[in-house]
Image 1: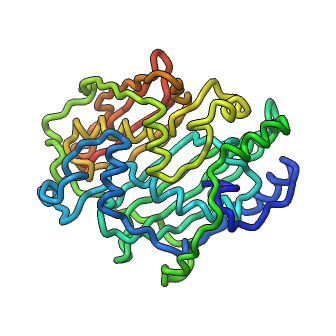
Image 2: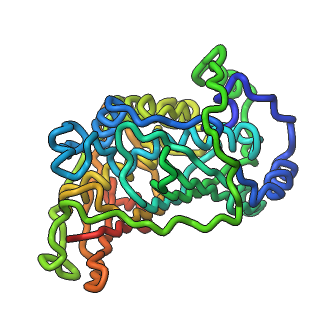
Image 3: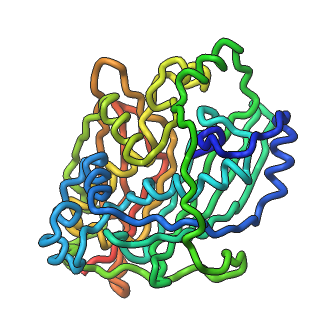
Length: 357
């Protein structure tokens, strides 16, 4: 996703952390439209659903999907993680440069749904750098927010996303570990060039954000809900096998998800699950309650503590939730989600807005 993953990318000059920050801060407001669309595939939808342990029938069966109002399989609510890495690759390899994979952690994710992603969608993404902040104390950090507005081939908005990232640029790295990184990172001799498949003007930074909102579909009846109502708790098990599988599904080669050596350099206590993987598990949990993944309107998460996964055992990610608020005029409601690993909360804030029937 970030610098170093594309062997065809231009080499980045060896800049100091302050020089990297100065260069990238000047790029706030930069907009571009991806050259190549992403086509949602039938088996990719199923692979992602398996990776987030989501057995909802609309992700697996065309007959079931038709019952939910779609002629094709509907992607799970966090399927954007598969497309998002592709969409942002250019930003982090050719624009906001200077960061190594293992230095970067996702801190916040906001997903605004306009309609569900589904098989056959040819997704086009407008990408922008929304904000940048450099900190030099108590440690050297760069904090940035990128925005994606995703459209289908019919010019209809599908999703708007905001991703907050923190890069630890001031880390002193042992040269021996740099050599180890070179032997751990995924090797690809060269990527093929798909050419320019998106035939539309580049993104306009002044274009208004989409406001379309999903339909209720087969979501549960608004009138059956009460504020404070609690969802039945549920736990999901994760092993290193789950992490490696998820990394392959979404195309994320970041070694903090599989290499014990690299996580030491990153200052982590161990190999960690992907933030979007735990967010996907949370979406699976809530989908089981509301009944229809197409009814997600917005999903916001602040990641506060990584999920550490040992090399020789599984770990449990435990979810609880309750109905936080209900709006009788729009028949929408907000569900407050809590995710934990043991006694540690992995989300500082997590809410899902749903369009109920």
